[in-house]
Amino acid sequence: MSDRSRIMLLDKKPDFSDESSRWAAVTVRNKAADDVFFYSVLTTGVYCRPSCAARLARRENVAFHENCAAAEKAGFRPCKRCRPNEEKREIRQAKAVEKACRLIEEAEELPDLEALAQAAGMSRFHFHRIFKQLVGVTPKAYATAHRAERVRAELQQSGSITAAIYDAGFNSNGRFYANTGKLLGMKPTTYRKGGEETEIRFALGECSLGSILVAASDKGICAISLGDDPQTLVQELQDRFAKAILRGGEGEFEQWVAQVIGFVDDPAKGLELPLDIRGTAFQQRVWQALSEIPIGTRLSYSEVAEKIGAPKAVRAVASACAANHLAVAIPCHRVVRNDGALSGYRWGVERKRTLLDREVDAA
Ligand SMILES: [Zn+2]
Image (cartoon, rainbow, N blue to C red; front, side, top):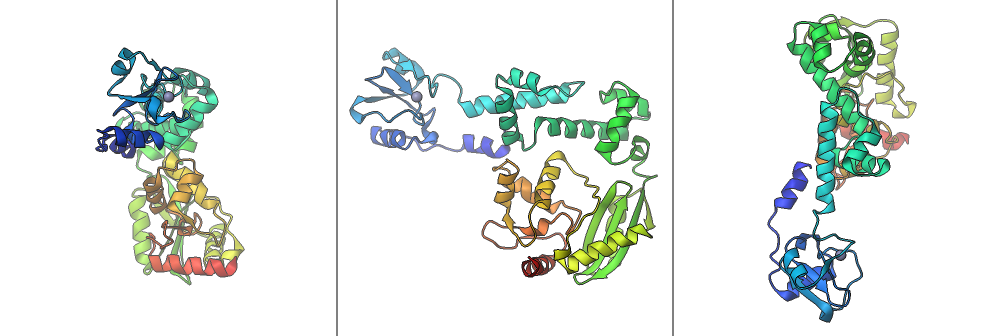
Protein backbone atom coordinates (compact mmCIF):
# COMPACT_ATOMS: atom_id res chain seq x y z
CA MET A 1 0.00 0.00 0.00
CA SER A 2 1.33 3.46 -0.79
CA ASP A 3 1.94 5.94 2.00
CA ARG A 4 -0.81 8.12 0.65
CA SER A 5 -3.52 5.50 0.82
CA ARG A 6 -2.28 4.52 4.26
CA ILE A 7 -2.73 8.11 5.40
CA MET A 8 -6.18 8.24 3.86
CA LEU A 9 -7.20 5.18 5.85
CA LEU A 10 -5.92 6.67 9.06
CA ASP A 11 -7.60 10.03 8.46
CA LYS A 12 -10.26 10.89 10.96
CA LYS A 13 -13.66 9.93 9.57
CA PRO A 14 -16.78 12.05 9.94
CA ASP A 15 -18.63 10.40 12.82
CA PHE A 16 -22.00 9.41 11.23
CA SER A 17 -23.44 9.22 14.73
CA ASP A 18 -27.10 10.00 13.95
CA GLU A 19 -29.60 8.32 11.65
CA SER A 20 -29.99 11.21 9.24
CA SER A 21 -26.23 11.49 8.53
CA ARG A 22 -26.11 7.70 8.16
CA TRP A 23 -28.97 7.66 5.68
CA ALA A 24 -27.35 10.54 3.78
CA ALA A 25 -24.13 8.47 3.59
CA VAL A 26 -26.05 5.45 2.25
CA THR A 27 -27.82 7.50 -0.44
CA VAL A 28 -24.46 8.71 -1.85
CA ARG A 29 -22.69 5.39 -1.13
CA ASN A 30 -20.08 7.24 0.91
CA LYS A 31 -16.98 5.06 1.26
CA ALA A 32 -15.85 7.09 4.25
CA ALA A 33 -18.75 5.60 6.22
CA ASP A 34 -17.64 2.01 5.59
CA ASP A 35 -16.70 0.19 8.77
CA VAL A 36 -18.26 2.99 10.83
CA PHE A 37 -21.74 1.46 10.62
CA PHE A 38 -23.70 -1.09 8.55
CA TYR A 39 -27.28 -1.00 7.30
CA SER A 40 -29.83 -3.73 6.82
CA VAL A 41 -32.78 -3.93 4.45
CA LEU A 42 -35.90 -5.49 5.89
CA THR A 43 -37.36 -6.61 2.55
CA THR A 44 -34.25 -8.55 1.44
CA GLY A 45 -32.99 -9.74 4.83
CA VAL A 46 -29.48 -8.61 3.91
CA TYR A 47 -27.07 -6.16 5.51
CA CYS A 48 -24.54 -3.99 3.65
CA ARG A 49 -21.70 -1.54 3.87
CA PRO A 50 -22.78 2.09 3.28
CA SER A 51 -20.86 2.10 -0.04
CA CYS A 52 -22.58 -1.03 -1.42
CA ALA A 53 -23.36 -0.71 -5.12
CA ALA A 54 -26.71 -2.49 -4.71
CA ARG A 55 -29.90 -0.63 -5.62
CA LEU A 56 -30.88 1.90 -2.97
CA ALA A 57 -33.54 0.55 -0.58
CA ARG A 58 -36.52 2.57 0.64
CA ARG A 59 -35.78 4.53 3.77
CA GLU A 60 -38.58 2.88 5.79
CA ASN A 61 -37.04 -0.60 5.25
CA VAL A 62 -33.54 0.42 6.38
CA ALA A 63 -32.08 0.00 9.86
CA PHE A 64 -28.57 0.83 11.06
CA HIS A 65 -26.15 -1.37 13.01
CA GLU A 66 -22.88 -0.60 14.78
CA ASN A 67 -21.16 -3.75 13.53
CA CYS A 68 -21.70 -7.01 11.65
CA ALA A 69 -22.39 -9.00 14.81
CA ALA A 70 -25.27 -6.68 15.71
CA ALA A 71 -26.75 -6.94 12.20
CA GLU A 72 -26.51 -10.72 12.27
CA LYS A 73 -28.00 -10.91 15.73
CA ALA A 74 -30.97 -8.95 14.36
CA GLY A 75 -31.40 -11.74 11.80
CA PHE A 76 -29.72 -10.32 8.68
CA ARG A 77 -27.31 -12.10 6.28
CA PRO A 78 -24.18 -10.45 4.84
CA CYS A 79 -24.72 -9.05 1.32
CA LYS A 80 -22.94 -11.10 -1.35
CA ARG A 81 -22.02 -7.99 -3.27
CA CYS A 82 -20.25 -5.76 -0.72
CA ARG A 83 -19.31 -8.62 1.64
CA PRO A 84 -19.62 -6.48 4.76
CA ASN A 85 -18.23 -9.22 7.01
CA GLU A 86 -15.00 -9.56 5.04
CA GLU A 87 -12.05 -7.24 4.72
CA LYS A 88 -12.58 -4.50 2.16
CA ARG A 89 -11.56 -5.35 -1.36
CA GLU A 90 -8.96 -2.56 -1.59
CA ILE A 91 -7.27 -3.76 1.54
CA ARG A 92 -7.40 -7.40 0.46
CA GLN A 93 -5.87 -6.42 -2.88
CA ALA A 94 -3.18 -4.26 -1.30
CA LYS A 95 -2.25 -7.12 1.02
CA ALA A 96 -2.16 -9.61 -1.86
CA VAL A 97 0.09 -7.29 -3.89
CA GLU A 98 2.35 -6.69 -0.93
CA LYS A 99 2.66 -10.45 -0.52
CA ALA A 100 3.45 -10.81 -4.23
CA CYS A 101 6.24 -8.21 -3.89
CA ARG A 102 7.79 -10.24 -1.06
CA LEU A 103 7.50 -13.45 -3.14
CA ILE A 104 9.27 -11.75 -6.04
CA GLU A 105 12.01 -10.42 -3.78
CA GLU A 106 12.64 -13.80 -2.15
CA ALA A 107 12.46 -15.95 -5.27
CA GLU A 108 15.59 -17.47 -6.82
CA GLU A 109 14.07 -17.31 -10.29
CA LEU A 110 11.64 -14.68 -11.54
CA PRO A 111 8.31 -16.29 -10.49
CA ASP A 112 5.88 -16.67 -13.36
CA LEU A 113 2.75 -14.58 -13.54
CA GLU A 114 0.46 -17.57 -13.20
CA ALA A 115 2.03 -18.59 -9.86
CA LEU A 116 1.91 -15.03 -8.49
CA ALA A 117 -1.72 -14.60 -9.52
CA GLN A 118 -2.62 -17.92 -7.94
CA ALA A 119 -0.93 -16.95 -4.66
CA ALA A 120 -2.89 -13.68 -4.73
CA GLY A 121 -6.15 -15.52 -5.44
CA MET A 122 -6.79 -13.56 -8.63
CA SER A 123 -6.88 -14.32 -12.34
CA ARG A 124 -3.69 -13.61 -14.26
CA PHE A 125 -5.17 -10.64 -16.04
CA HIS A 126 -6.72 -9.15 -12.94
CA PHE A 127 -3.57 -9.65 -10.86
CA HIS A 128 -1.39 -7.99 -13.50
CA ARG A 129 -3.70 -4.99 -13.65
CA ILE A 130 -4.03 -4.57 -9.87
CA PHE A 131 -0.29 -5.01 -9.34
CA LYS A 132 0.52 -2.36 -11.92
CA GLN A 133 -2.09 -0.02 -10.48
CA LEU A 134 -0.75 -0.27 -6.93
CA VAL A 135 2.99 -0.61 -7.52
CA GLY A 136 3.31 1.52 -10.65
CA VAL A 137 5.18 -1.11 -12.69
CA THR A 138 4.43 -4.63 -13.95
CA PRO A 139 5.45 -7.64 -11.80
CA LYS A 140 8.20 -8.41 -14.30
CA ALA A 141 9.63 -4.87 -14.22
CA TYR A 142 9.46 -4.96 -10.44
CA ALA A 143 11.37 -8.25 -10.35
CA THR A 144 13.99 -6.97 -12.78
CA ALA A 145 14.51 -3.74 -10.86
CA HIS A 146 14.73 -5.60 -7.58
CA ARG A 147 17.27 -8.05 -8.97
CA ALA A 148 19.39 -5.19 -10.33
CA GLU A 149 19.31 -3.49 -6.95
CA ARG A 150 20.52 -6.66 -5.24
CA VAL A 151 23.31 -7.20 -7.72
CA ARG A 152 24.47 -3.63 -7.25
CA ALA A 153 24.47 -3.90 -3.46
CA GLU A 154 26.30 -7.22 -3.55
CA LEU A 155 28.94 -6.04 -5.98
CA GLN A 156 29.74 -3.01 -3.92
CA GLN A 157 30.13 -5.03 -0.73
CA SER A 158 31.64 -8.37 -1.61
CA GLY A 159 35.22 -8.92 -2.63
CA SER A 160 34.64 -11.62 -5.16
CA ILE A 161 32.47 -11.42 -8.21
CA THR A 162 31.61 -15.12 -8.00
CA ALA A 163 30.44 -14.75 -4.39
CA ALA A 164 28.30 -11.79 -5.39
CA ILE A 165 26.74 -13.79 -8.19
CA TYR A 166 25.70 -16.56 -5.80
CA ASP A 167 24.61 -14.16 -3.06
CA ALA A 168 22.39 -12.30 -5.47
CA GLY A 169 20.63 -15.51 -6.37
CA PHE A 170 21.94 -16.12 -9.87
CA ASN A 171 22.87 -19.76 -10.11
CA SER A 172 25.29 -19.82 -12.98
CA ASN A 173 27.94 -17.41 -14.15
CA GLY A 174 26.70 -17.69 -17.70
CA ARG A 175 23.26 -16.42 -16.80
CA PHE A 176 24.66 -13.70 -14.65
CA TYR A 177 26.72 -12.25 -17.43
CA ALA A 178 23.85 -12.67 -19.84
CA ASN A 179 21.62 -10.58 -17.56
CA THR A 180 23.74 -7.93 -15.93
CA GLY A 181 24.81 -6.06 -19.02
CA LYS A 182 21.19 -5.12 -19.44
CA LEU A 183 20.60 -4.35 -15.76
CA LEU A 184 23.65 -2.30 -14.94
CA GLY A 185 24.64 -0.82 -18.26
CA MET A 186 28.23 -1.91 -17.46
CA LYS A 187 30.01 -5.23 -17.06
CA PRO A 188 30.15 -6.52 -13.43
CA THR A 189 33.90 -6.05 -13.03
CA THR A 190 33.80 -2.43 -14.04
CA TYR A 191 30.79 -1.75 -11.88
CA ARG A 192 32.46 -3.08 -8.75
CA LYS A 193 35.33 -0.69 -9.25
CA GLY A 194 32.89 2.21 -9.30
CA GLY A 195 32.90 2.50 -13.04
CA GLU A 196 36.71 2.78 -13.12
CA GLU A 197 37.22 1.13 -16.47
CA THR A 198 34.16 2.57 -18.07
CA GLU A 199 34.83 5.11 -20.69
CA ILE A 200 32.49 8.00 -21.08
CA ARG A 201 32.91 10.21 -24.08
CA PHE A 202 31.58 13.71 -23.96
CA ALA A 203 31.48 16.87 -26.00
CA LEU A 204 30.59 20.45 -25.20
CA GLY A 205 28.87 22.82 -27.52
CA GLU A 206 27.03 26.09 -27.65
CA CYS A 207 23.40 26.22 -28.63
CA SER A 208 20.69 28.84 -28.47
CA LEU A 209 19.96 27.83 -24.86
CA GLY A 210 23.54 28.27 -23.67
CA SER A 211 26.22 25.65 -23.13
CA ILE A 212 25.34 22.05 -23.82
CA LEU A 213 27.11 18.86 -22.77
CA VAL A 214 26.43 15.49 -24.35
CA ALA A 215 28.01 12.34 -22.91
CA ALA A 216 27.79 8.68 -23.90
CA SER A 217 28.81 5.28 -22.55
CA ASP A 218 29.18 2.35 -24.92
CA LYS A 219 25.41 1.76 -24.47
CA GLY A 220 24.34 5.14 -25.74
CA ILE A 221 23.84 8.70 -24.60
CA CYS A 222 23.94 8.89 -20.79
CA ALA A 223 23.78 12.64 -20.19
CA ILE A 224 22.53 15.74 -21.95
CA SER A 225 22.72 18.86 -19.83
CA LEU A 226 22.28 22.57 -20.34
CA GLY A 227 23.78 25.46 -18.43
CA ASP A 228 25.54 28.82 -18.50
CA ASP A 229 29.03 27.55 -17.82
CA PRO A 230 30.62 24.60 -19.68
CA GLN A 231 33.07 23.92 -16.83
CA THR A 232 30.18 23.34 -14.40
CA LEU A 233 28.57 20.89 -16.81
CA VAL A 234 31.77 18.83 -17.01
CA GLN A 235 32.12 18.94 -13.23
CA GLU A 236 28.57 17.60 -12.80
CA LEU A 237 29.30 14.77 -15.21
CA GLN A 238 32.49 13.90 -13.35
CA ASP A 239 30.59 13.87 -10.02
CA ARG A 240 27.94 11.57 -11.38
CA PHE A 241 30.40 9.08 -12.87
CA ALA A 242 33.10 9.56 -10.26
CA LYS A 243 35.44 6.79 -11.38
CA ALA A 244 34.76 6.57 -15.07
CA ILE A 245 37.32 7.79 -17.56
CA LEU A 246 35.96 10.88 -19.27
CA ARG A 247 37.24 11.44 -22.77
CA GLY A 248 36.54 14.08 -25.35
CA GLY A 249 34.52 12.50 -28.15
CA GLU A 250 35.33 12.50 -31.83
CA GLY A 251 33.98 11.49 -35.22
CA GLU A 252 30.56 9.84 -34.98
CA PHE A 253 30.18 11.30 -31.53
CA GLU A 254 30.53 14.85 -32.76
CA GLN A 255 27.72 14.11 -35.15
CA TRP A 256 25.47 13.04 -32.30
CA VAL A 257 26.19 16.26 -30.48
CA ALA A 258 25.49 18.23 -33.62
CA GLN A 259 22.18 16.37 -33.86
CA VAL A 260 21.22 17.27 -30.29
CA ILE A 261 22.17 20.91 -30.78
CA GLY A 262 20.23 20.93 -34.05
CA PHE A 263 17.21 19.55 -32.28
CA VAL A 264 17.36 22.07 -29.45
CA ASP A 265 17.50 24.89 -31.97
CA ASP A 266 14.90 23.44 -34.32
CA PRO A 267 12.66 20.86 -32.61
CA ALA A 268 10.86 19.95 -35.83
CA LYS A 269 13.98 18.04 -36.88
CA GLY A 270 13.24 15.26 -34.40
CA LEU A 271 15.80 13.29 -32.45
CA GLU A 272 16.79 9.64 -32.88
CA LEU A 273 19.68 8.70 -30.63
CA PRO A 274 20.67 5.50 -28.86
CA LEU A 275 19.92 6.37 -25.26
CA ASP A 276 21.50 4.83 -22.20
CA ILE A 277 18.77 5.34 -19.67
CA ARG A 278 19.81 4.62 -16.11
CA GLY A 279 17.04 4.62 -13.55
CA THR A 280 14.66 2.57 -11.51
CA ALA A 281 11.92 0.60 -13.18
CA PHE A 282 9.39 3.27 -12.27
CA GLN A 283 11.55 6.12 -13.57
CA GLN A 284 12.06 4.23 -16.80
CA ARG A 285 8.31 3.86 -17.24
CA VAL A 286 7.85 7.58 -16.74
CA TRP A 287 10.71 8.43 -19.11
CA GLN A 288 9.28 6.07 -21.71
CA ALA A 289 5.92 7.85 -21.41
CA LEU A 290 7.61 11.25 -21.71
CA SER A 291 9.39 10.24 -24.90
CA GLU A 292 5.98 9.48 -26.41
CA ILE A 293 4.62 13.00 -25.84
CA PRO A 294 4.41 14.52 -29.31
CA ILE A 295 6.28 17.70 -30.07
CA GLY A 296 4.31 20.86 -29.31
CA THR A 297 2.15 19.01 -26.77
CA ARG A 298 2.09 19.54 -23.01
CA LEU A 299 0.89 17.03 -20.44
CA SER A 300 0.34 17.58 -16.74
CA TYR A 301 1.99 15.37 -14.12
CA SER A 302 -1.44 13.81 -13.46
CA GLU A 303 -1.89 13.01 -17.14
CA VAL A 304 1.49 11.29 -17.26
CA ALA A 305 0.59 9.31 -14.12
CA GLU A 306 -2.68 8.34 -15.82
CA LYS A 307 -0.82 7.34 -18.97
CA ILE A 308 1.49 4.90 -17.19
CA GLY A 309 -1.46 3.35 -15.40
CA ALA A 310 -0.56 4.71 -11.96
CA PRO A 311 -3.00 7.62 -11.56
CA LYS A 312 -2.20 8.10 -7.88
CA ALA A 313 1.56 8.35 -8.36
CA VAL A 314 1.58 12.05 -9.35
CA ARG A 315 4.39 13.00 -6.97
CA ALA A 316 6.50 10.03 -8.00
CA VAL A 317 6.03 11.10 -11.62
CA ALA A 318 7.20 14.63 -10.77
CA SER A 319 10.30 13.19 -9.06
CA ALA A 320 11.06 10.97 -12.04
CA CYS A 321 10.82 14.01 -14.34
CA ALA A 322 13.23 15.87 -12.07
CA ALA A 323 15.63 12.91 -12.13
CA ASN A 324 15.90 12.91 -15.91
CA HIS A 325 19.54 13.23 -17.06
CA LEU A 326 18.78 13.57 -20.74
CA ALA A 327 17.59 17.10 -21.46
CA VAL A 328 15.49 17.42 -24.62
CA ALA A 329 16.03 13.78 -25.68
CA ILE A 330 13.64 12.70 -22.93
CA PRO A 331 11.31 15.67 -23.16
CA CYS A 332 10.51 16.26 -19.49
CA HIS A 333 10.10 19.91 -20.48
CA ARG A 334 6.72 18.94 -22.01
CA VAL A 335 5.33 18.17 -18.56
CA VAL A 336 3.72 21.07 -16.72
CA ARG A 337 1.69 21.55 -13.58
CA ASN A 338 -2.01 20.62 -13.54
CA ASP A 339 -2.97 24.32 -13.77
CA GLY A 340 -0.69 24.77 -16.79
CA ALA A 341 2.08 26.60 -14.89
CA LEU A 342 5.54 25.61 -16.07
CA SER A 343 6.75 24.24 -12.73
CA GLY A 344 10.47 23.51 -12.36
CA TYR A 345 13.15 22.42 -14.79
CA ARG A 346 16.47 20.94 -13.87
CA TRP A 347 18.22 23.14 -16.40
CA GLY A 348 16.35 26.36 -15.57
CA VAL A 349 12.71 27.26 -16.07
CA GLU A 350 13.59 29.94 -18.65
CA ARG A 351 15.09 27.25 -20.87
CA LYS A 352 11.92 25.21 -20.44
CA ARG A 353 9.82 28.18 -21.55
CA THR A 354 12.03 28.79 -24.59
CA LEU A 355 11.89 25.11 -25.62
CA LEU A 356 8.10 24.97 -25.30
CA ASP A 357 7.55 28.22 -27.18
CA ARG A 358 9.74 26.99 -30.00
CA GLU A 359 7.92 23.68 -30.21
CA VAL A 360 4.59 25.43 -30.54
CA ASP A 361 6.02 27.27 -33.53
CA ALA A 362 7.49 24.06 -34.96
CA ALA A 363 4.47 21.82 -34.51
ZN1 LIG B 1 -24.24 -4.90 -0.10
